[in-house]
Length: 400
View 1 (cartoon, rainbow, N blue to C red):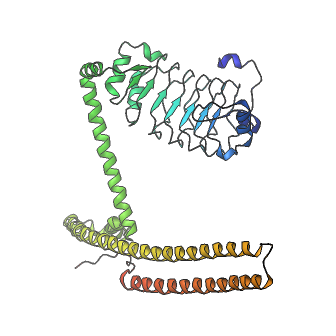
View 2 (view 1 turned 120 degrees about the horizontal axis):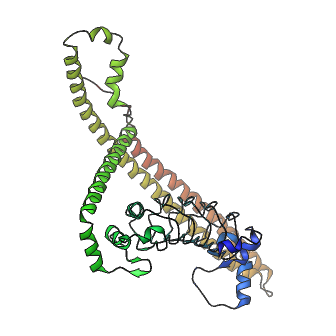
View 3 (view 1 turned 180 degrees about the vertical axis):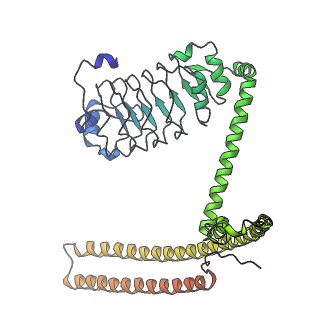
């Protein structure tokens, strides 16, 4: 279909085409008049679904401002590149099937995607999808993927993937194609439109048990490495928050800057002196770092307590002020309605206006009183914070 459409002049996405292609996320039955009205009156920023099927579109473009878009159909066109949709971060459903796409790209920011169809394109391998951890359904059939092992290993980390279609790729001709998928993708439910048989899964896992054991071990090793990297990052952030950046390399920097080092290196016992110094430094620095981080966490907790108290106090005063203004506005509307009556006497009108003026003065006094109370409470809270929350000094190491 994509090749047949190439005979016509490529269509450009503009506002007119966008409005003609507006649809709904769920299929609903409405009259043609209602459809036309819906398409013309819906603001661009409120559009949730667009269907550009069979529009002979060559380039994805001009989709600016569609921030509420949840569902986008661009199937059966002549699109060659995935582009200009990275800002559509609310997309959950994307159909790019039956196009001329050769590379998976430009989808990294669409982390809410649950359904993605790239069926019947020219894609040779899976890539640039790793951020789409919410992906539940992936249709990548009728492409040019030849390596089923690489594809399966790429898809293993996707925690929510339940539906996969790879039928029609060269790799699907592998006699062990289906068995490999159900053995390696442990949570898969449908493969190539067929419900996965639990008995077949067990048999497939037994068949590939040696290979799976190696995969599990490699994944375990990578998970441990990632945990170490994360712990190191957290440690570095703790040191930064406590003004202790660079403390682990402090001694090395001091020795490096010591101009006498070159002379001392010639002494036979000098390496032992350095080793002992480094050992002593490490013990002292570790104790100092732990104590400083602990104190910093304590101060941050105290600071958070005072900030919460301050915010609560201001929210309470704001609510009280809003309530007073609301009551005044209700009273004002009532008095205005009284004044608009045809048979009102002059003395009654004067009385109502006087009452409204007095209410306004009373409101100003009440709001001023609330503001003064807020300032007093803020001062009290900040006074407590000043005596309790003390900024930590820059870390310095003392040797005894």
